[in-house]
Image (tube, rainbow, N blue to C red):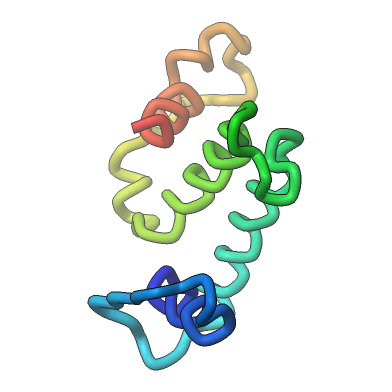
Length: 114
């Protein structure tokens, strides 16, 4: 999706894009790829610090970027890989919330922060 976006900007805004070097790009995008990209873009745009993209010199939209990155993790990791990284709880519903902080939820949060 990044290569397609770069080409889109180069064609749509030639006065703002002097050069564009795209190394690799697919011939088309799937509906799933488009949906994930739109969700990531929305996460960034809804950050209060995004300010329509004019956040230079002020606080950056770090919360929106962090959420977009978390979403991205699901696009390039397989279900099998995620299953292997997160231990299966014995009984999540019966376990107290404090105990769950060291269980699967904590493991997923650590994975997404990496």
